[in-house]
Image (cartoon, rainbow, N blue to C red; front, side, top):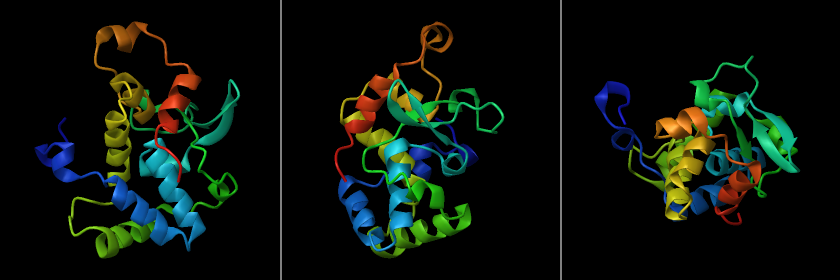
Amino acid sequence: MPSRGGANALEERHPLDKTEIAKLLEITKETPIINNAVKVLYTSGMRLSELYKFKVNKVNDVIVYDLTDREIKLKNKPSYRIIPIHRSIDMELLKQMPSQPILSRAINGIIREQISEDSRKVLYSLRHSFASHLKNNKVEPTVISELMGHSHQTMTLQRYASSYDVEILKEAIDTLGNM
């Protein structure tokens, strides 16, 4: 998939492996707001900019990040979606999210200084980790695409198939395990 400068996304960013995710969560444990933000980004696959645009909602008894409001500006049409909230998320801390620059600096600093020397492992790697770990957990690619706000691969799914039920999306999020 093309990306900035013609490089593909994996040449630009590498996912954090499960050990690196665990280490990042351990290091940020002393700063609960940052720790919660790491969990949100890793368990939702949201882009950093989306972190500041969702509303919490309930769909069929499932609590979700709701990015369906057409009044908000998102990257593209498939970006308007719902994502079930992982059980590890502290709902009260969601209301105290640090500013985008502070969060970005904090997480990138920790990754660079304490997690990996690979310059392609950064905050955005959490989005790559989300996709990679779901894929490795054998979650259907179309479910991963919908959770991430990507277009489906075929005309049938793009144009004619309805969205997955929120319960199926929640099962995918739950495969990420306990934190």
